[in-house]
Length: 228
Image (tube, rainbow, N blue to C red; front, side, top):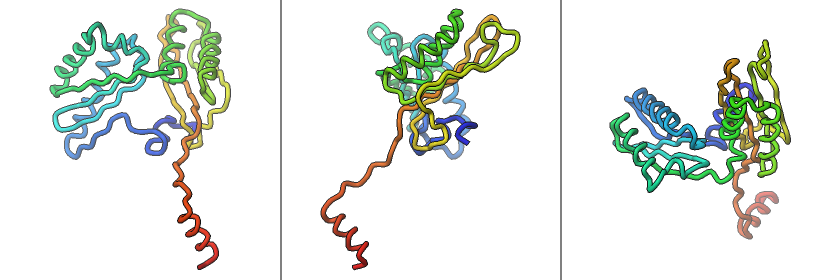
């Protein structure tokens, strides 16, 4: 199962959280399409800003938008000019008050979306795809990833027939629900057609917090075992 579905959706509510946090009874469809328009507008306006994730939270007539980016300087602009212009565009688009928050990604080398975008950009510039894959895997492992897997699909190197190539290091347990796996898909546009780039980054296991052991709980456990 873990090999056939999106790794993030597979773990929703277990080790990953929703990117849109709101509840609607009647106008669910309208709000869903509003979310899609917000994301589409942000990604089209900030193509070079290294946007990895966009989180949306709603309350009454206000939408809180949190942007996770590796280049906050580009998003904010000189004296906040870019972020203010983006906020006004979003408010005109959906007709609601927008509150923008910018969060910096400290280690972009282990972010799946940013890795996929970097490889796609290199392929578009005609860099050898194997070199781009190997470099991305080595960088991620060097910066603390437990495992990385990258798959490219399409007419690689201008070949007549499309094929898939995979580069992997470490381990990526895709069927383990407690495994924290980041996943990203990006398309590289070349003269030969589109090439799909998929990236899995395994960052370790997320284990539940254990209650601290005290003298009282230890006594109760021993009493339960002895049958008293």
